[in-house]
Length: 117
Image (cartoon, rainbow, N blue to C red):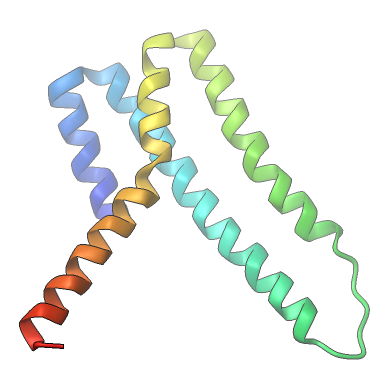
């Protein structure tokens, strides 16, 4: 995701200008944080389900889950007030994990076809 974010940010800067590229870069950072926080939340929930005998509070899990959406809304609000033209770049950057998953799927397909699996 990091390599894809860098390449696409440079391409956005060259094609659409620096405002769109900065919005895209901010969206990519938020998407990256969102992905890792979601991983942590899921791992925490799995740990809570599989642990037996210990009752732990789930407040931290819920706060981290909601913080992800608050961060995205705050960034969209800030960009809308500062540079409305960058908002579309932000939304494009938020879809970075989708592009990364598509790249991974294409790579796995290529490996499977070359190995004859």
